[in-house]
Image (tube, rainbow, N blue to C red; front, side, top):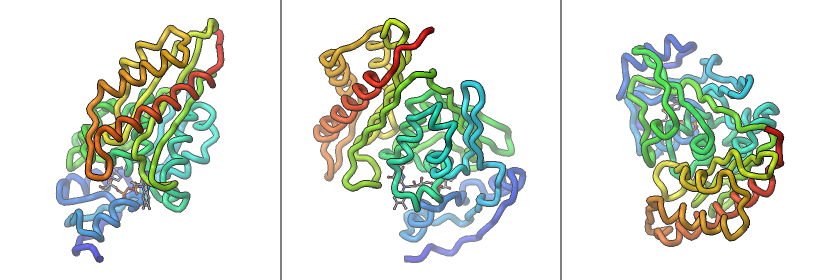
Length: 292
Ligand code: FAD
């Protein structure tokens, strides 16, 4: 298949990008890594009148970790995250999530902004960012907006982005030193989107009690879901296997899960429980006692 005819615009800086989006807005799509947009255009799932290529906007490609915040530009390739020492030291969860995205060839092109804008339900990076404390910075000619992940991803393939806006930056507040992370997913083949995935980061205080816990799941849930009730239930405690299993059961029972003709709802719930149970145990067992 070939795409329907479209006008191609290449922009070299953010000023040109905001102007092009202001001019063409809803008729345009941004081309970042092209790993989803190009196949979608070839299959004519989408047929934008205008494609705005932002690959020359070098100012959107960076990883900047300072103090307890890491900032990632929208055009940062997945492979840059995978290879980043500061990120793997400070935020192991994101590195683990990225390694589950497709294969290295796709990760060499796919970008942070692209996967967030797409909001595919089984995508790994949006789950990791939903689980951590993350803000998304959006920009347009009208100005800049900062949204938490929960307000940015609204559902499957649905975000708060307006036609004239682009994702500029992701800002992640780093988990505390000594925390342990675990990302567990089930997919049909290695490199496929997840059928179900879970992400957990845990840290303990000097007495061995959990004083930092972040947990989330994705796959069959529309948008990725942060499990705040589970986090609150286990924080301040040193839970054993039985307590963890009960919390997992309650957490998955409480969320909305959609079935389809490949994976019915009860199957999805079963797999979601399995991946969450494993990720929770890995992260809690792996977290070190630390002086606070
Ligand atoms: P593009 O394809 O260029 O764009 C996607 C959408 O995002 C378009 O609508 C575009 O207009 C919009 N967009 C891009 N950048 C911005 C921005 N800065 N602001 C606003 N909108 C923007 N992903 C996974 O998560 N897990 C997988 O297992 C996985 N497997 C894959 C396997 C294959 C074979 C392929 C080809 C892709 C796979 N992907 C997977 C998707 C890939 O990882 C990319 O993350 C994804 O395609 C989007 O990134 P991109 O940069 O390629 O975006």
